[in-house]
Image (cartoon, rainbow over the protein chains, first blue to last red):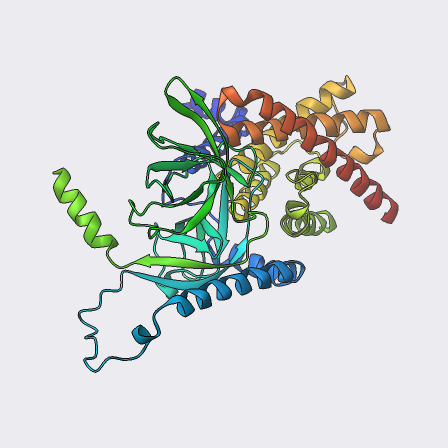
Length: 275
Length: 167
C-alpha cells in the first residue's frame, strides 16, 4: 500500500497529465463520430452570447452580400407568384378545409452567428434553439442552397453540421435526369463539393444543376445545391464529380431551419419495416 | 498575489483575443494562428506543475467549446504544458533551473526563439493530427502545421516584445 502511494506521489504530475489527456482524447474521438450528444459544442449560453456579439459587428462587413441574397430570393418568389394562374390565387367559394390541407415543411428564419470553412470538420452556430422548437437532424438552408443539418441544440442556440464536414452525407439528384447521388466533401475547396454514388446511366455534362433529392426526411425535394463543374469517368463509373455550389460558403448570414412535420411518422414506418 | 492576478487576466484576455481576433484572421483563406499558447509560455516556471497542467487543459477546452473541435486544443495545450520544463532544460543544457529568478523573456534571443518554435510546432502538430485523424493526410497535416506555426511564432514574438516594453 505504501509503495502504491509512494508511486502515485512520485509520478503525480505524469498521472495528472495522463488522466487529463485521456479525457481530451475521449472528446476528440467523440467529435469524429456523427453523434448528437457531444459535450464540447458551441451551442451553449456563453459561447452563443460571445458569437452573437461578434456577429453583430462582423455582419456589417457583409451587409451588401446578404441584402443581395434576400433581394434575389424575393424576386424569385415574386416571379413564382406571377407565373401562377391568377384564378388560383382568388379564394374559391368552397373554402379549402385546413384539416385537409397537408403542410409538410415549415421554414424558421435564423442567423448564422459563427461560420467555419477552414477545417475538415466544420460546424456553424445558429441563434435558434430548443425554445424555438429546434431539434437535432433538421435541415438548414438559405436562398442559394443547403448549408447543413442541426447537430447539438441548447435552449437558444444550435450547432449545424456544415456540408463542409467529412461526416456530412446528403442525398441529392440531377435536375434533368432525376438520378440520385450523395453529396460529400473532400476537404479541399470550400466552394466545391463532390457527388458520389452516381449511377453510370446518368448522362451528365458540365453545368448540369444538382438539387436536393428528397429521399431523406431532412431536406424537401428540389432545394438548389450547385452545378457540375467537371467530372472524370473511369471503368464504367464516375470517379469524381465536382459540384460548384451556388452559395459562397465564406459569406453566409440569413438562413432557414426546415421542419418536416412528417419526419417522425416516416421514421416510425422505417423502423417498423426493419424489424 | 500580483502574479496570480496577472495570470488570471492573461488567461481570459488570451481566450477573448483568440476567439474574437485570431480565429477570424483566415490568412490566405484558411490559416488561423493560435496565439493563446502564449499562456503556457509565460506561465511562471515552478517545481509544482499541477496548476499549470489543469489551467492549460481548461484553456484548451474553452477554445474547443468555441471551435466545436472536440478536445483537440485541450489535448495539445496540455501536452506542451507537460513537456515545457524538459524542453527548457534540454535547451539550456542544464539539469537544474533557478526557478525563482528564471524568466523566458530574459533568455538570449536565439534560445527564446527556438523554445517558442519547438513548443508551437509540437502544439500545432498534435492539433492537426487529431483534427484530420487519418495517416493518409500526413502531408496536409505537416504543411498546415508548418504554415500555421510560422504565423503563430511571429505573433507570439511580437506580443512578447510588446509585453516587455510595457514592463
